[in-house]
Image 1 (tube, helix red, strand yellow):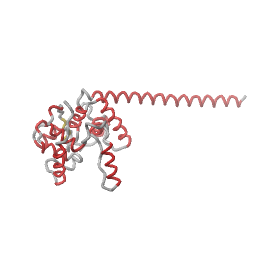
Image 2 (tube, helix red, strand yellow):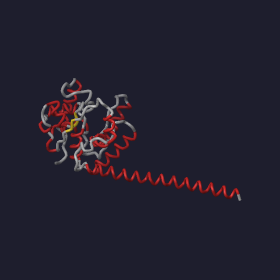
Image 3 (tube, rainbow, N blue to C red):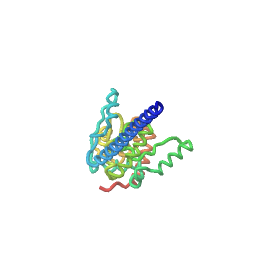
Image 4 (tube, rainbow, N blue to C red):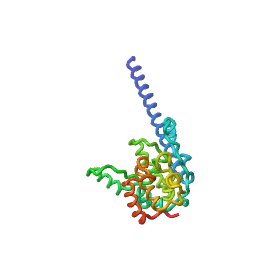
Length: 245
């Protein structure tokens, strides 16, 4: 009799634990579904709403609050038609030459980067403009596998819901161009005292030349390496088609 009661209690305890486990699974699945739809809404909204409305995630904003020396960002949005075609071609030549033909991931560039690492030529990035937009607009700056996974996820969504023109426009308006300078309008005025629509070929190529490390190099005082890169970009700009208006 006693053993039967004990078995019944054990069975009830197991049933209770299983019920709690399934409840956790249910809530977890519900949370994932909710986050999925939120991410869809975020990217879809970018078709019509310009950052910096959601340029920074709440996490990034909180991080900046605790960094007293973090410079205030200067962001001045410019529509695609208001931006010089020279800087559009320059960033494509410098950062993503297959932008119009890939679907967010440039596997040719990635393969070349892996070969360089394997042969000891050093590490270089293989991020496309779409990947950089995903990182800048929606995610936090830390380099973790979680962030890289989310970056790939948002890259897919951006390519699905946005045109190439809108992705390029967003990139040009959100890319970091040095201390306290974000976006092409702020960069053009800071370094050359002109608007983004009046950048010359040489100025555009110089801006694009410092993008790998805008806090280390400056268009205002280019070193030999930056000037050499500018010449290469000027040459490649001639072969860079632009997204249709």
